[in-house]
Length: 312
Image 1 (cartoon, rainbow, N blue to C red):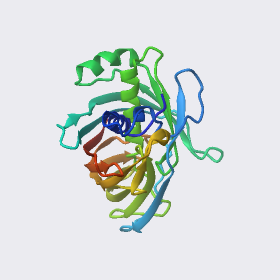
Image 2 (image 1 turned 90 degrees about the vertical axis):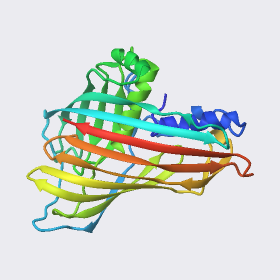
Image 3 (image 1 turned 135 degrees about the horizontal axis):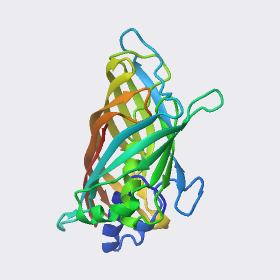
Image 4 (image 1 turned 120 degrees about the vertical axis):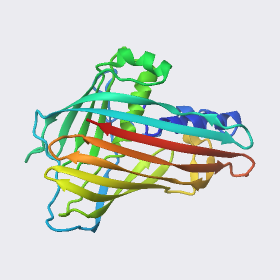
């Protein structure tokens, strides 16, 4: 089971295309990065795409270089809530719902290793308490997943460079998949600060490549709305653009034309420079997508809405 970003989309698209004989087996494709290391039968660590931050406006004085460097041993209690709505139709067929239920993960974050002269990144250990969901099937599967662990490798800019996932041995597949998806949504929606000094009113762009069945260029335009000591409120406006005009399907199964791809969104994140994770935040990204086979005989349309929330 390889981690991937936006797994439900890749799976649902594969199922739909197989029904029209355009594609068989897309649901088994590996859209995300392959595991970098495997420590146990359940633990896997995968890289997260690199981030580049470019300042457009440095903002007002006073300005400073913003760094997240929580000391080793720092602990934080925070809840991560995610959801993903996916509605899909093929040609004139009725729309189908492939959404992922809302999931809330109460997390205890502990800084196991802090940034130092010999360590360029922080290592943050995460432990999941009693996860909940309004979906009955997912809620029933979450019990054995209590105590699952994860981990982040974070640079002082706030960018995540690696994600570790370690579900409990008794975790059901439905719970593992939902938890995996929640963390992938979260790490690609984190705030990364630039190397330059900035002040209130600063605007910068955060560039990152996202794999969602295809390669996407994601640009988050960040604005520093407020700063009170180590507490900062940042507004994010996100857009995603495909790198190609066609989508090469997995396993050499052909390609689809990308006729339309619109994914945009916005929200705010509140960051405490002494804590590893956001202390508050709400970000929604959504849009419309349309694909067709090269002959133009079959068309597939999707409407998507992803939401990530943080609450202390």
